[in-house]
Length: 167
Image 1 (cartoon, rainbow, N blue to C red):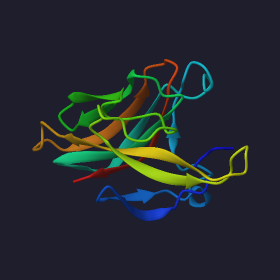
Image 2: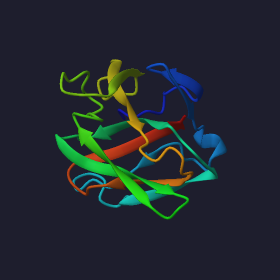
Image 3: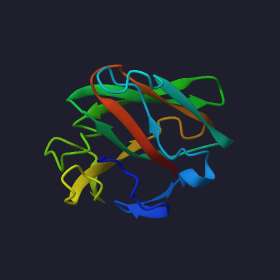
């Protein structure tokens, strides 16, 4: 109940950014990365490494993500791995770059809320849930990126990564 099973799959544009939403039927039943949260998702992984199919120079990344049981503060990070062996950490913070998927716009956030209609609720009445599109400018644009690692801070919040677009 109250999940994203009704989210549109395939090529979608949110906040002007194109994303590819993975169809779980073509990916062994998996579509998003949901990480560990202390309260409700303690059995999930603390981090997941996502290799790029080919190392590429990237100007910026756009993250389509959300948080369940999201509370203010650092809920995790994205670690960008470069071909030269270095890394850069991007803080995943509420309300700056992410938000609780039950709440709409927060005046302090820098990300863009994306409303998603959910009808599989306990009440049976449709409700809106909110993903976020967050932009990150790469300080090392000339160095190819080999992977991105999504991590949880291990607190109350459950970080959820739906898609990443690189430019």
